[in-house]
Image: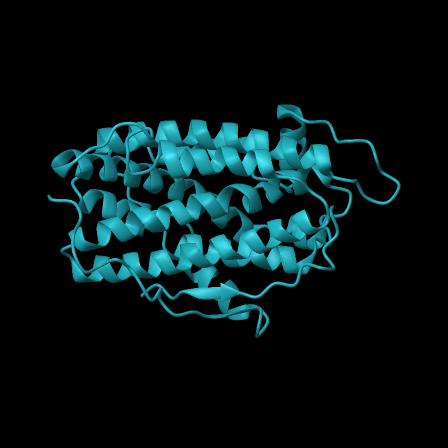
Length: 304
């Protein structure tokens, strides 16, 4: 059973460069606070729409837990972004762009323009859930990386920020199969799954690249360092080889697994490690949360 939790973070003492001397890596990792909240709330809206269509009781309960966890993730990262904004950082353009993507282009109308009904509505929902399943593979891969990473801790990364990433990563491993199973339950096949994955990876890379640039442009640096870090593929490779970001090889191997015809995410990550990390965090760092009061489960809005 998936257990929803709320994260209680205190951000006032978090420096702009929260990994000492690693401004570029901080900027890359900070994109989570910008991109994930609107994306994860979009996940919740889609899964709420799908709930009345789920005939399997266990999957239905898993989806409810998934919705609760993703909502908590969105709140946790949104709190960090709000702290940055209170310090004068400006993310208005990026937030408008992301809201248009998730609220309009990927909303209930196809590309924000074409209304669909009946079976067409189901197909559009299934397509978007296929994209969620693809993104969830990416987040599980990233979650697995952060759970096993020792470099950030040894480098003196801010513990509150590190705990947020560990909590999120552990829960991504915990619910790694839900979106995939829901996509299959609604009739999704392998060809569509692979297509949505390629599209999702392309979109994630472009979005993360732009988000990193937004953070770098506004970062005040650390101590006497005021020069902006070098930005680009070489900078990423250098930081990843040092252990501050996932290596390109790790990401490529992980992403290629998803393209196997027989793939299932139950083989991803280390659930025991995720459980141990969650159980080992400071008391009060996160707390159990209740499922959302409203899950829109009364009447189906899409016919199968």
